[in-house]
Image: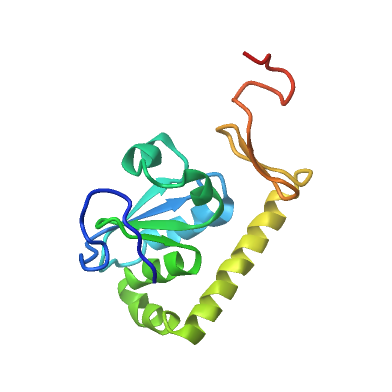
Length: 166
């Protein structure tokens, strides 16, 4: 699992992880289901859940790429470690009492290939679910994802061409 410091000058590679913040898409049914499942599991390392891209996430992690966190699972350790994609899933499982052994197996080269496949399958399901509404996945905060050209922001209350340019 790779780590990169987000804040402070703590050496994220040598500092033990005492807590993890999972950034999740609060408007994604799969993401909310997984969050609810994780909350119910016994945790060896406390997990905190914060909606990705929210004001709380931006305040807590000002140096993080929040657009990326909306499209790819992101977990931040209390020492500044940042995990994305398959590594984020693995470190989240590592925090759970019942799944720590599985996380260690998934952190091997062959396990990582399996974890990446699981993350890709979840992303495809999420994309297919989002695209049922005309191909665009819309969030209540103005962000929308179009599989053809990525994320776009339209201020709430404005249709795509209804707001006058300043």
